[in-house]
Amino acid sequence: MAAIRFTFEGTQTGPMPTPNGTVPPSNRKVVLQGTEFFTFNSSGKLIHLETLTNDLGLMGQLTAK
View 1 (cartoon, rainbow, N blue to C red):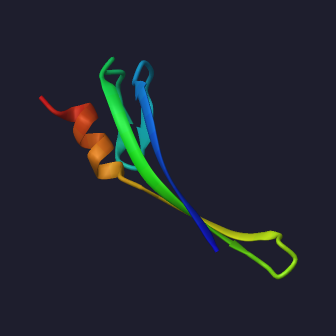
View 2 (tube, rainbow, N blue to C red):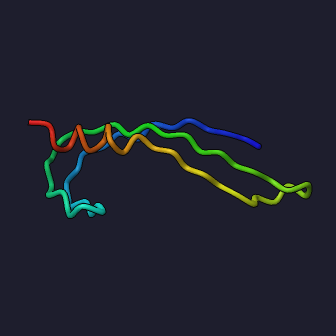
C-alpha cells in the first residue's frame, strides 16, 4: 500500500456540477486537499485506488458570502 497527500489550488471560472445542482462560476480562488491510497498485488500491479477529498471545505469556499 502507498499513500499520497495533495493540494490543488485554482480559480473556479466555469460551472461545477454537483449531486445537488450546478454551482455557477464564482471566480473565487480555492484550495482542495486530499489523500489517495493505492493498493498493489504481489506483482506490483495497482488493484485499488481510493481518493478522499475535502469536498465540504471546497463547497464552503465557493459558496461563502
